[in-house]
Amino acid sequence: METLAFFAVLIFLGVVFETYKEKRAARRILKKAPEVIQPIEQPSETVYDLAPYDVPTPELPQLEDTLLAMNRDSKKLRSYAEELDRHKNRLEAAAKKAADSFHQDYMKLDDQQLQIYRRVYQSRKFLKRFRELKYQKISATDIPEKLRITLPRIPSYLDAKAFNKKYSVNVTGISNATSRTIMNNGGLKNSNNLWVAAIGLAAVAVADLINTSKMKRKLEEARGSIINHGVSLKTNTQSLKNIHIELVDLSRKLKESEISLIGMINQVGTIDRKIKKLANVSPENKKYLSTLYFLSVEAEIHCKTKL
Image (cartoon, rainbow, N blue to C red):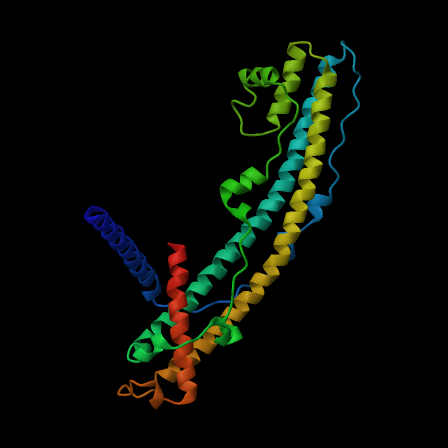
């Protein structure tokens, strides 16, 4: 029993120590001087331009489908694969441009919220002497609306790794044997370009006298995949555009919060330093002190989630 009690104490002390470390780390972040917020502006219409997604996907060229015309057909298919590749790249470039713009402004907004919390934290020098504050019952609903700002969740696919995973199209229906042949012929092995696989398959078709109709089917499947891909990219771009409008509005609200906080902090800063009881301050200042105390606690919690 004594051994169990000993280990329980060790575990408890470990948890306390980790909590203490997190608290100190959060406070280090908050102690930095806040920077003045510069509201985010709405990006130009070209950032979320949907026109690239409305360009028709190139159709498969007419083939002769004879053994003697195999070389000519393979060239057409190779050229078509390259055309599909260029079309896909244009779609993905437009989507990435939108995603990058959104991500950049979201990170700005996230930083602006941190500046708000830093500014709140600066007021602790006025709060420390009012020890009663820690016993004050106050909830988020007691905080003025302009100081209750929640950021929207960032779409999970906007980090680089997830973006590449989501925004990728695979040529379907290629057998393992054919795939190995392409790789051995320098197709997939030597290039990150997805559609070089299709080009490589066309070359293999000529070399091994594979009927070009097989390659034709694969490129038809690839075309269908690109069409679906474009629809998905267009939908995501429109979604980001809508959320970006919200980011701009939230940034404006954070600026208003900053102005409001500066006024509150300046106001409580006029309280006589000899006063240490809430009963001895005006109702307005008492409300300001309670609000600032609540927000300072929230600031630490917020920064802990960032560690």
